[in-house]
Length: 209
Image 1: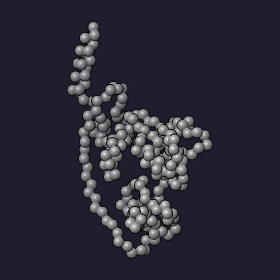
Image 2 (image 1 turned 90 degrees about the vertical axis):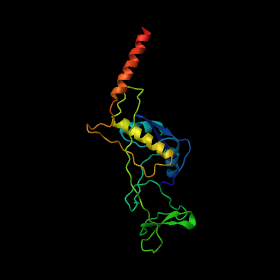
Image 3 (image 1 turned 30 degrees about the vertical axis):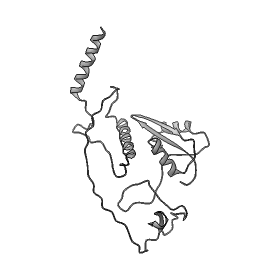
Image 4 (image 1 turned 30 degrees about the horizontal axis):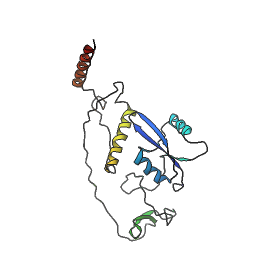
């Protein structure tokens, strides 16, 4: 039950490195998600057995802790995915049965309630305009051994960019993805920059002789 109180495992992504953090305070799942997104990247995603073992070492034995996996059977009519919810706790909704449609009750701060779909009520429509924008990035690598085309590295960078958008409150309707070029790669080395870097390194070595 998402309303139970427990500690949470957050994760923080910095490049290819993933760090898991166990919170000190207990909270319900939505609060845990908000806390992790505010202070780290998100609630923990466990992608393989190695990361699962790291969580086993992090969380004291016998204690439950929230992670980022959740099940939501309610779907938006336009097909979009969203982890946000605003159900009324006072009414105990959603409580299932034949109440399979949702209203927002603006007498009570707009909280959601599940109703049967045969009620006649005012309704709210929206218009969506989708635009696509391609942004060219130029990255300077401090670590020359880092492969920017490594899927794990690219995923980590996308998560960091997504977090930057969240901080600017621009994340809700923005989807980020890498655009592959004709050879199937996303990043290519800047040959001009490489030459200048080599010349700089050569001059530095000569100064030391």
